[in-house]
Amino acid sequence: MANKEVTFCDPKHLEEDLNGTTYIVTGAHSGVGFETTQQLVKQGAHVVMACRRVEDGNKVAQSFSTLKGSYDVMKCDLADLQSVRDFVDAFLSKYQKLDGLACHAGMMNMENTPEYNKDGFEITVEASFYGHFLLTELLLEKYPQLKNLDAVFRSAYRN
Image 1 (cartoon, rainbow, N blue to C red):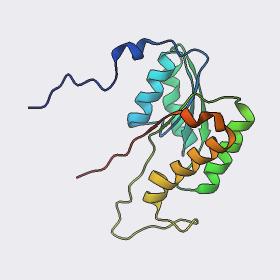
Image 2 (image 1 turned 90 degrees about the vertical axis):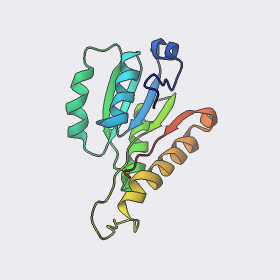
Image 3 (image 1 turned 120 degrees about the vertical axis):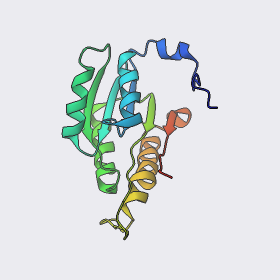
C-alpha cells in the first residue's frame, strides 16, 4: 500500500521568506509548473513564468494577484530554439540576477508519425529536453557564478 504522507522536502522550506529572489519556471501555466510557481509566489519570490502561450500564462497568473510575491509572464517556446534564445535575451535585459530555475515544461506528440520542427528535431524531444538544455546553458554562460544554481528538471510520461 502506498504511503499517502510522502513529503519530498522539509516542510519548513515551504515557509521560508523568498522576498528578493527571482526564479524562472517553465511550464508555469499548468501542472507541476503551476504548483511550483504558486508556491514560490506565495513565499514572496518574483517568478518569471516562461510560457509557450503567453495568454495561457496571463490567464492563470491572475490567481496569484493576492499572494505575497510577484510574477512576469514571458514567451518561451521550448520546441523552438530561437524562441529560447530570444527568451534568454529578454530575461537578461530585464533582470540582473537569477536564484533558481525549475524546468517543468514538456509536450508529447500523440500522432502515429513523428513531427519535426524548423530546427530539425522531433518536437517532443526538443520541447522536453533540448530546449531546457539550451536554456540552462545560455543562463550559465551569462551567469557563470550560477554553477551552484538551484535547478529542477522534471519530466512526465504516460504508461
